[in-house]
Length: 291
Picture (cartoon, rainbow, N blue to C red):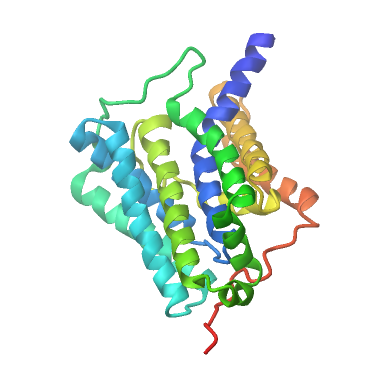
């Protein structure tokens, strides 16, 4: 019994890690006042680029780096469109998701990425964890320190609350939001890369399976804090693990219902524990510099 519980908990942590990176990326953007509805598109791009680059260079770390750079470029574009052109952030995010799915589907069918058998992998330790697992858990603490114990983090959160005050202090609102968009997108891209190169060791079309949207829910559930976001991510990870166990257990449990479990669990948790959440005051609100 104890071994079964430990195995289950190990699986919960492992399956939570891609979503954890994506959620921390979304958190970075949203505390700065930028709604990242496009996380799903950025994540699927990271998944495809990560496995293509890993296969090309024979190194998963190189693949992850290139995936982060590709996603970061999309983050910079997203930032330009919402900061400079003031496009509606929710509508733009949906467009990015559609573009991400369309682009990766086209590239996959052109180059048969889903047929790649990845020979280079991350090494596992005795617990069955990969290095990105520990890096991701450590990143929760690092993001907390950055947001609450550094001048940069305080400025970033201030931009999400009242950008006019930040501007009056002589700090560039645009610079901070661009930085948040690029860093956030790179973390989302790494989450997508680890999903394909580490967790599954292969690519499949639409393999992110709504994780970008779940990342938004995890950040809201976590009340825009890194530790709270981790809790939201683990809830989805528990649901995902339970779903896979039910499908593989041969119990005759309807697989359609099993597939719904992580999403239903996330929605229920969001409804029960997020009623007192206070969004950043300027979240999603375009800002024009005072003349």
